[in-house]
Length: 290
Image (cartoon, rainbow, N blue to C red):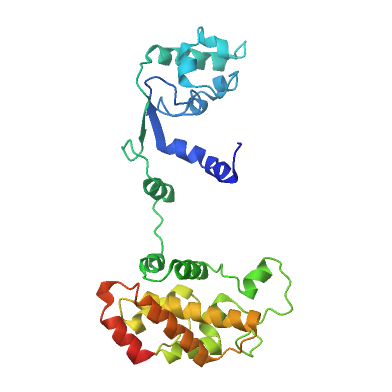
């Protein structure tokens, strides 16, 4: 467990990787005798009592197969159960012959090629992500806007409510965009605040009352009824966040008209990135609603 912190983080996934990979032994140089899956399952799991007597838990198959006698890398004497497992191991080793070829690694998706996508899909299991995440990454927004909205959906944007949860002291945790003395949460700042509701209303959208953020976003999608609905939602949320930050860090008074100008500027920039299938509807929508 040495090296950079990136490498140490990767090593934390080593056990999960071993659950995905198996090896057909050729020269035995690339696989571990106890840790890797070359005989149905790792010997560390199938022969636990014998493994507890191993002198070198980390040893390659090549070195283990060529060690004579095999009892040489165990701490003797063995207990009865460990000796029984040793006899079974000897029978297994009699059917293993090393060659000069490289070991062949395969994965549970029956392929010799490893891809991060296939590993992720397997480790994720049957859990289906909410459609909103697909909407975010398929949108034409800049990456910083996508990541921002992705954090917003997971309640990870640094509102004062989130900072309070992180035990950060602030003079006030109230929303700066309104005078309601309401704590600045994700729902309040972007959807419930009078300021944010007025911003949404300027582009013809109404925020419905619901305890679930996803339901409110789906309501906005139905109201927009355009293929580029996600771009509109993301940019408006970024606009509200920009006005909020300018009010806190630059002392710029928050006004709905300024928010509209920011939204209009960002959306015009988006036209250079927008998908061809959005035209001319996206230009017509911008002209009619902003």
